[in-house]
Amino acid sequence: MQIKKIVQVRNLIIGEGMPKICVPITGKTQDEIFRQAEAFAVNGADMAEWRADFFENHINIEYMNIEREEQILLVLNRLREILGGIPLLFTYRTVAEGGNGQLIKEKYQKLNQAVIQSGKADLIDIEYIMGKWICTDLIRDARGKGVRSVLSSHDFEKTPDFDEIVKKMEEMRKLGADIPKMAVMPQNRKDVLTLLAATMEIAEKLDCPVITMSMGGLGAISRIAGGTFGSAVTFACAGQASAPGQMNVEQVKRTLEMLHE
Image (cartoon, rainbow, N blue to C red; front, side):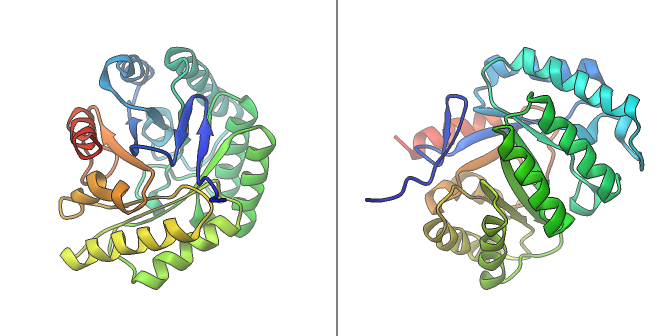
């Protein structure tokens, strides 16, 4: 019997059928954040990602006190109300991984633990760069609260070789990640093929969905064709992009539907 490599979040089944479309919420103010969330009713996305590192109260902040943590949780609570049944991924992306967040490891872990305990996020992004102990602790905490973990790694300078991509994603799964995620930057067309070939290899090997993407304009094809090679989620924008090469959600949805007719 073939094992189903799926993860169910609310009514969304990741790893089955057409790749799911995730749109990041990147507002800097509460009003912008809530306005972007309200637009989900018409933009056609399957899931939302709140990029909390874009929130103005947390850009260039190297510490986290009770007041700031509570404000994050208040915004998260309102997002949950606005999104209703739409799955929500919480992401605090650090500078080292291409984001705006500058929390030290201990504060990063504390913030994510608070988000997990709140029960308002369906999935949580955990940066592989944080190291084995923080990753495994957060994955364990998430599992205990029924929150799915996306263990992520980003390389904004290059595309690692085939074996390195496969090995890293295998390690992510061994740490307990529900969904390993890897984004890389291509320097040439061959790099894009390397990423797609590694995606196919790892999607066949692992017993879970995977997410991969080749960033920038050169890698844009991976955001459309990645599902053919085994990537279960693609990221698209409804306004400000959160990563190089993100395409408009309406364009991505139309193209995916044509490919999967």
